[in-house]
Length: 596
Image (cartoon, rainbow, N blue to C red; front, side):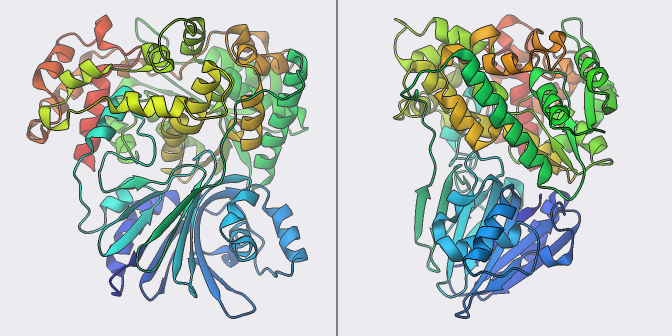
């Protein structure tokens, strides 16, 4: 829910409210129900609200409360605290009083009670800013899994923050110089630029599971409040014992996300195991009249454009109230610019347009949905994980074992892709080596799955779902990224997660609950074939972008590299190791830069 932004001036001047209003206009789709602005001297907060919990004006933001000593605190908040009712009871017992019934005020009272450690008490997805009027300090925080986004920048006169990167670009005087290291990450890791980097040198992403406190003069203190350990418990467990624990944890994760809403909750049903299991869990918990939504595209000669045969089986099994949408290629292409506009950063996943168009239709019926993102990273569902595991012994360093199955481009190819001014060292290799070598991971595959879960998933499926759903005022909740479920999964031996062709524990708990055809099907990837097997009008579209005067003047890509891809976009070397289109990656990035 919601979009947030704000500014604190470091030169004792007053923030420009007209500038903040421009930023709020960019955020309006994230919060179509209400908006607000609040100022305290050099501090200015802005908020757009999507009303999910406590639909009354009592939960209007920015929200300001005072304590018994007359100190005041203000907050702008994006997300949902799933355990807010329990925390509210605890805080009332500690002497706090409440004027609203939602989760926003719980954040403020928790900050009053526990200070910066308040985030350790929250279960949910969140990004928020709190202003302490007495100490004149700004406190920013992001949830453990990075489900809700938060961007910020600091220059000599100000600190700006917002829910999306384009919101910051709407402010005056933002330096737009591209970051060569971020570009290296972007074109190596499938569009992922892990926090704190973004494509722009001046703009940072708040790292998941971090908070940062700024003083009135700009001094910053940053702290990590949670980390993931991938180690085995002292007592070994059987495959079925692990599966039963996963079942209980997932059922809890689904239920708390369904319960924390004053509106109906639907499910984005792709037909894959993960979203189907969410429907099954809701049914098992006794919920009826479940609302489900699926989308498909035109087929190509190489690949089907939908997975309706599987989603239909789930609908029949659980008798859901189902909406099925089919998008022809000409409609997908005509709406592509809108989806790109909605991207906080350029995202390569071919399903981005799918989520965008699906969210448009779903938002007409419900405002909260459950989605299956994160299950593949947490439980080892992608095809490259077994490949890595099979080559985990005697295959060089952990970085080599990882990159040979994952990187879209190795460093020598990056040097051919980018022009001279953006070339440098192997930044992506250095980044992944650091992530893999973090302590508290027992095996190589523990390293891989933890790095994916805590750093890479944030900027691929998670950001994609947040951006595309929030573009239509639709809140997507991701039970598979419940931090307690993630902690449990990280302690499971990797060989059990990779068993049964991946997601072993999930398949065990699905047997007898879901149709066998859904459990035993090959892994699907939300197909949009036209953006993978590029030909016809989609090829012409990409030719126009990459041949445009803007692209040539930007000077980001080496022209010889572009021409080679354009001449044969469906050749084997035109696809990445995980079967993404290299041409689409280049065209999408340039198109996003032109748009923003």
